[in-house]
Image (cartoon, rainbow, N blue to C red):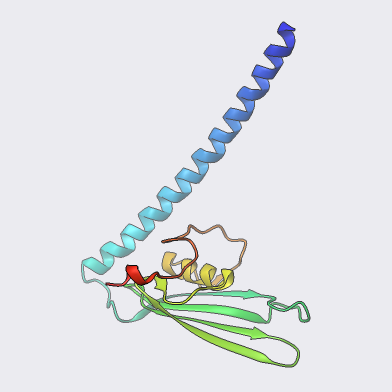
Length: 154
């Protein structure tokens, strides 16, 4: 009985240590990304960059439709230093192509974004472009779905 309790305690301790290591690594990643965002904002505040010029972009290629493979669809985010810009998406199928453009203000989309559009916008805001994939780990901004609520506008 005492051996079983000791083994259970050892397993719980190892599991807790593993969770702590994963959490520590994620915290370090978030701290690094926050530092990069602050550095980019300081460049803007110091007047070292033209806030109206498009400076950040990212593109995500993906298969939007099951009928066609080869990552022919894409979402492209183009934003300036203050986070204003556009996300353009092209959904390509065998018989038709659909293209969408969504406005971005202050780093947040005015309309709801797809996961691929959101990934492109997040990558552009972090300066991780030009080419990113859906598997690249990027932090969420705002409420997580990339849209702007009516109360967020001022």
